[in-house]
Amino acid sequence: MSESPFTAGTIPADDISADAEQRRHRLFATADQLRLAGRGMEALHVLAAEIATSRSGERHRAHLLGRLAQTVALEQPTIALAGLREALNLRLDARSRSTVLALVATVAARTGHPDTDALLREAGTAHAASGDQSSARHLALGRAARSLAYGDLPGAQAVLAALDPDSWAARADASSIRAERVLVQLGLGRHQDARTATRRAPGEADVSSTGLTALNCLRMVAVGELPEAAALAVTALSSGSADLSSGVRALLVAVIGEVRYRRGEHDDARAILRTCLAEERWPDRTMWSLAFCVAVRDPALSAPAGLLTRIVADLHRSVRPLLPVPHVGPRLVRAAVATGDTLAARRVTELVELVSTRTPVPLWHALADQSRGLRDGDPDALRSAVDRLRTTAARPALADALLDLANSPRLRSGEARDAAYEAAALYARIGAPGDQATADRRCADLSATPRHRQSIDGPPGGGIGALTPAEERVAEMLAAGATKKEAARSLFVSFHTVDTQLRSIYHKLGINNRMQLARAWERTRR
Image (cartoon, rainbow, N blue to C red; front, side):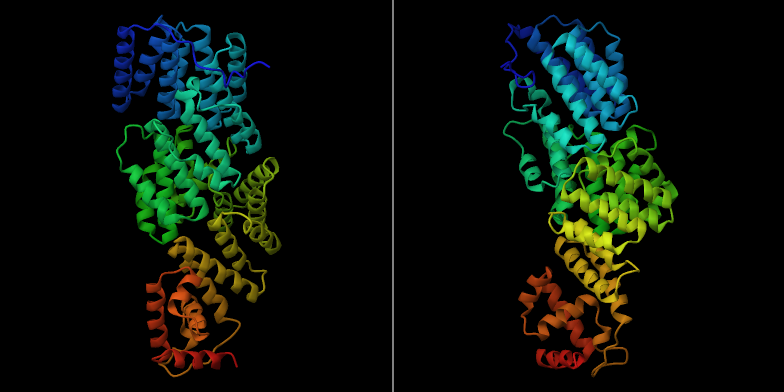
């Protein structure tokens, strides 16, 4: 059986003189300096010109093409595409030309460019004529990116499975291969596999490390490790690494903004997200799509910028921004319903349903149910979403779905109250006090209407009925005999939080000890 072009052995060694190797190092240093000075087009031209004129052998050509691909990955799409198209005007040999064509197709596929299919066909024809290993890898990456743009995660997974990032021939492209694989794992809900895959391999380049760090932050956001995600993203963003690409920076900004909103730190979230709202050019704005999806929850940012309209238009080119963080799709539907934009709600729901059809896993079935439930105000669809999300690790998505269910006007108050209570507890567990406060307010609204609890000794307006939902949960557990430590563990909050809430409970009820609390609580149950 013939060996796959993706896993073929090492590139044949050439006798490269020390002068040629030194020239390559000087060339790479020059390209890096140009890129860091904001002259990405010139950096790409320097590398492409050397590829066109070099006669130093196959290994030298492979190094040059690898550095060209890495530089493309660090630039904005407009610069990358312009630089690659300029390279095609040079007198490249057939194998180098097929690789550059594959790079163009890959950049186009990742941005949802309308010419993607034609570019992939052209790159495929060039590769068939040249048989070049480098063009084979980049053509595969382009085809995987196209599958991701259409929401076909199994298709992308199948293409990427043929690539071996650990082979010598693929080492310059290893970071791109690993990053796309992690994105597929996140989209499939295989968060533990994604966690393993984001660990940096020994000797791996910094450019790979920063990209995998950003994807690991997205994984943390998806599963509800919010404090850890924010800390890692802030560290990476403030590192000043020269290999922090615009795309990676955009993902880190989205992570920080997401966590700050969920914490209730809205001003801080707006401060970091405002910087991305000025990017209105397509396709460069596609790098910021996930950050836009974070900002859309905030009317103060989204309404003036017309963010929802912009996001929906870009999602019709590529659903890639929906894939790594599962609660993004339903959030867009929720924002559209809140503003009365029924067209946007319908279009986003259709896109989420499209992904669930092409990627038939419990996570996407749940997100499709949740999107339909929000669009149609259907509590049955929201119940189905909650049930399915319970089988996944996507805890923020589950908490959001529970709160959506609690907010459903067609739901019985008792069931809505239970959903709101569970949402509040889950938000507390994942470190989202801002969202927890929202769920607590919903609990209070639902608790105030159906029943009125008689006050015991205390000031007017005090009594059991004056407790917040969070305080009520603590009071119920402590009245039943639980210790403060047991209550904190059960409610997924700190011991200090329970202690503070207990003091507030004593003040509102006008009591001084646990025995009085037990009697007061028992009186409300009669």
